Image (cartoon, rainbow over all chains, first blue to last red; front, side, top):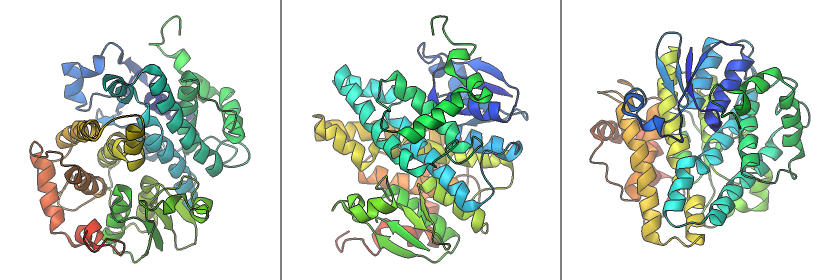
Length: 211
Length: 211
């Protein structure tokens, strides 16, 4: 498989964690979002939305959108499973994933922040915007996840795949995480888990030398 | 089942379509977002995020986040299926759903628009913001969906469950849809499909008399 990725992209990071948890080999094809490579004609011809991540599956098909890519990986490479067997428990994990993927991350995506700046918001206002959505979302996540282990038990799963990149983004933006002891517990476990270490933005082929 | 819903909420509308396509009976429990009922203490005790939709499953469990609720319905009530059998085709449908659910709808959610207003944006600026994200997203959807029938074939599926409420929102905000002939074709089919008619915001128990 090949993954069109950017080292610091939250949604690319999710897919890298899912691939690493399933111990799947893939080639990274970096797309430099700062240089605008996602808007190059040849990339838009493959992905009309001009975003990362995009996965070239074993079959050669190009798949877009991290939630769709991760569900694909779960279906085609079911072990180790990212989702439990019971439908209600699956819905709980997917609920946390969707809360992060729909109600937090899209609101601090680089294109959104750029449009805020274009409409006259200064950096202080942009930072307050970011902190508002991350804090409001993580507060709900804190109440929805479990009391021990990863988000929902001893093994990492779908909710962790979404949470760890979101926390990475929160720290980049200097959002205070002190009020979320459950989330910080999950973060500590992930810091020592080889799949999360492998997928980290600091260790990618396109990570800048100073990164 | 019971659905905590608001007639005009895009994500509640999605779940209503999924329930109707599967011909599942449910009781509507309206939550008036304009009156702030989603922030009432008793509602927050059930749903810490204070949003709709929320589904009370047959088992009594409360499920949040429309993507998680819809996948739950698909797993527990598999027929008629909202997703095809082939994993790549499933990923294509989920990709369009995620594009709408992550990259369009969250950016014009009422809470986002209110924060824009609080930070000094006037109504013209808010309307330009809305049109920007809806147009950019639907342009990509237009390229990703098929040439006939619903988004991906003769029968409606997951992508349609997301697309039709998004088009409803686009029209409410007076976004021009003239450039999207494939999307408009799907809309015409949905307008005559009983499940989409049943789920429409104009026909809910909490639809205002003038609505």
